[in-house]
Image (cartoon, rainbow, N blue to C red; front, top):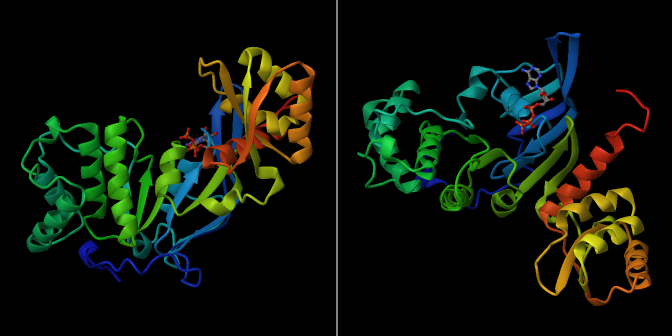
Length: 354
Ligand SMILES: Nc1ncnc2c1ncn2[C@@H]1O[C@H](COP(=O)(O)OP(=O)(O)OP(=O)(O)O)[C@@H](O)[C@H]1O
């Protein structure tokens, strides 16, 4: 059923019993490329399964080359999978029944610069075969939703990147899709632009729209997404609601801050020597060089024994620990722990060849 954004029911939020809107099972994609060294196979997706349900704002996260864009292209029906299955609304991806219900904002949308926001929406409405009255009504609704009302007769040439991206969101919503797919919606925007786009996504979330987005910007995802999947090297590492991904009771998610005195360049190697390689991967990104007399080191630890080992090592080298506190891991902590361990397990042993 297609309904107007202005009439969406916020109570229609994600339900575990509702049928999946995005249903991906054991998805595989292998690209075959030709180079001077001959034909090479790239495994972009290696058996990925995930689901997004009505009302989810689903964030797909992963470092470069994780397979996020490949996943989105398969969902949009522009790339064919090599194995497994993918459906939208119970219809095979790429079918016209599935496509009609999807709105898409590509990473780099190009709106012709001769357009105003109003004429651009008219153009996209016509592409979706909407009649003039519907185009007018829907444009009014969406210009208000994305905060471009009153700016609709201005040339997009004069738009900031944030305004341009909000217009992009409006074009993706023009035919009132049931699923919105956003590829890096805040990439390349300054903090003001990011905030503007995030507010629109939050409004859509509050209206109960189902959104599937991929992003590098973990803080953005943490703020807007209800569920996330973390991928690396074509594999799914974790999936679930953000607060369940890193449950505080899980020993492998024990994060702690150490406030101490001394030179961080000397302290970090002491800590790194005392912890396992997977914990080390979280340490390297979280050490803060604040320029103050005390420094904060943040890291994940597999268990309390790992924390004890770090404390013993620091005390053994005469470092004063001013404060030690456990805290709840952020999405970034969880991401670094999972992606760091995946990278460590894929790193070749000395002398080992790929
Ligand atoms: N058309 C293609 N032909 C060959 N290899 C490809 C093609 N598209 C993607 N790849 C490879 O597949 C892997 C996954 O790429 P993909 O673009 O899906 O990852 P990503 O997570 O979106 O990365 P990024 O954040 O850098 O865009 C990479 O190794 C990439 O080089």
